[in-house]
Length: 306
Image 1 (cartoon, rainbow, N blue to C red):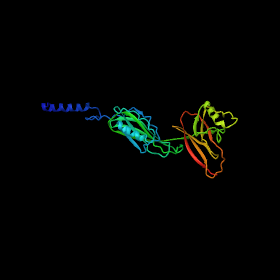
Image 2: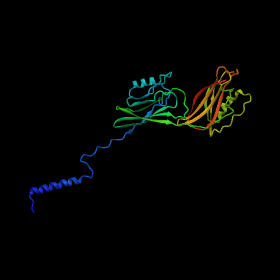
Image 3: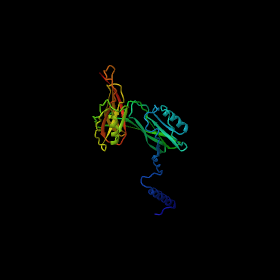
Image 4: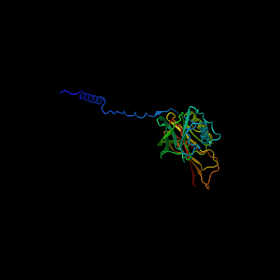
């Protein structure tokens, strides 16, 4: 059967359309999907050491801020150092090329708190700073002092918005075993006349301490043996007192990621106690496993009932 030219033309056009459809990949769309958003890129930053790690500051409120001018930086510094006399020199920042990101934790009633800016990234929505606030665990020894932790970093200047990604964590502390050095502990008449908190990690310093400590003894004995390859000594001295009735002790030692904490308890006599009228200078010392981290002291006072 013969077809007219017009019918042949329709058949050809239909075949072309079918071929064009079959050329598209399976599952494809005539309008291709938009590309996924780009991932945030890490921005290098420099911690400002004059601010970072500060626990006792004058920034009493919780704060997240960005500083882009020298005037703003000076205003922050004046507030931050308000309790320091004389105030330290303002750290130099080139605000033509950089900006400062500040995070303040706000006032806390004890030690053991800290704040840090751990990451800074940049994406389509601007700059994001990840802030981590750390609080002490239940087993941590805490100094009874009001703190206000602050940190600050400088990054390459950006004019866009800066957002803060918040994170919190709890610092865990573990008790450390220690051995009281009996030849020192409970000594009330010693040659250590000033209040002292110190760590001794070598034989020379131990011998020097012992010679000073034993000056009140006519025939001082040899210093107790300490293996400083394996151990170190924590010393706490109360300082000179005009009567008896005073004592000092290291009652607990703990460790955490930040270092070692020793709890020192000073005991004083209450009014009405019968006291020997003699000058005393109580001292104590304990032996602990050697470590390479910092040691801080938490202070406690008690009254001795008579």
